[in-house]
Image 1 (spheres, one colour):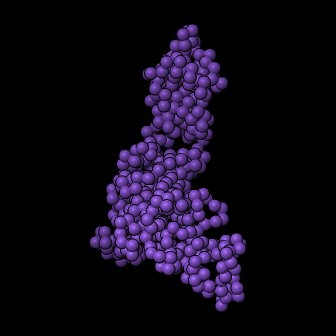
Image 2 (image 1 turned 135 degrees about the vertical axis):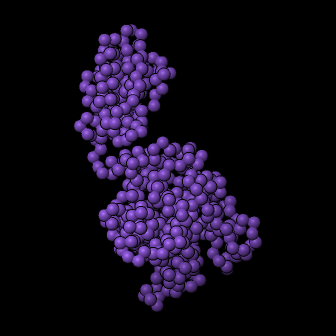
Image 3 (image 1 turned 90 degrees about the vertical axis):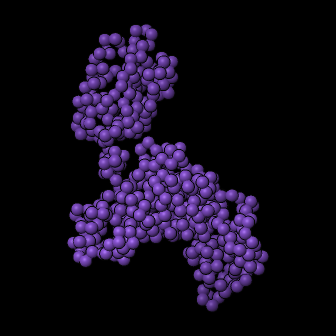
Length: 470
């Protein structure tokens, strides 16, 4: 936001030359208090901003006469105090242009009591240099969430108490609260409500579904993790080495997603003996912290999955929703956090996922592997954690001779060719078990190898064999 106390006339002209944007609005004059109140509400509901009165839309600076200033200041006061709900405290500064003309710099702060309404009860948001009405339930939810008046994890679902995974919830009550599972449905409902896992109309809320429902993917199918291992360093529309969707309660999603990452990492000797089991090229705790962060802090108002992409040179964890409120990448690197889903976080902290304290996960991941970049993408409403891998040529890979286990540096296609050559009758399931990817991914690779003319099938699917052509 512009610092009006330190602005010179040259600064003012430089601002005018830049044109309008999401934090800066020009008005040659103000005559309509209700229109001004809508502009103020839009700024307050967003990140705040500056309205420069006396500057035209095209950036020219006609200024205001001294007779205009009292009228406009009174209009500003009325709009801020009478025509915006809740009332706003704004600042004004009169900038003399040197020719008897004046520009009023009106600063509207980012609101602390969102959402703000105009006189007609309309909620406005800034969109670039313009403003627009809030016209969806999701946008309204997000405004209340930003004001800490509402959180996505308390949203009601259509799932009744009968959708609860009784064994999972029973074990949680026993292990954490030393409490037995309720004897009656009424007692169970009351307990879930007291634990902020169910609504007053006896439905599981989103936190209850994600943590303890028997099959959350049937209730909220969008909140899963989609994982893909691509060949090379770019996204391919059809080619991949491994692919899997992970669903279920958060703990199962976490365990399966972590397992996917770890099986797609190289194993290195790390100073151990040649025949000793290898260690992952990147410590497992790095992905523990980043996956917990993604599951706990993603924006559940956005109906989209978390995406997990593995490339040769990096691993990306892409979460729906940019950083909330005033958080920045610099702040999260420093250990500053903002809880977007307090119910989820409170139960994760009780041991449902590996958790070491609010705000410490990112720092712990960086301590174990400094080569991590974070991208707060407001345009696409995403937060991306990118873990950079070392080139294979710099790694001392675990394993032994070519006659022994296949080395981690080989691509899946090379491993498949080697296995087929050694055993032409091998099945896709056997190949998958040998190289640690899914049968579906193996079939995809085999199809690619067939199209490339590198292998062919002789005989029927059952009882036939593979032949390596080249």
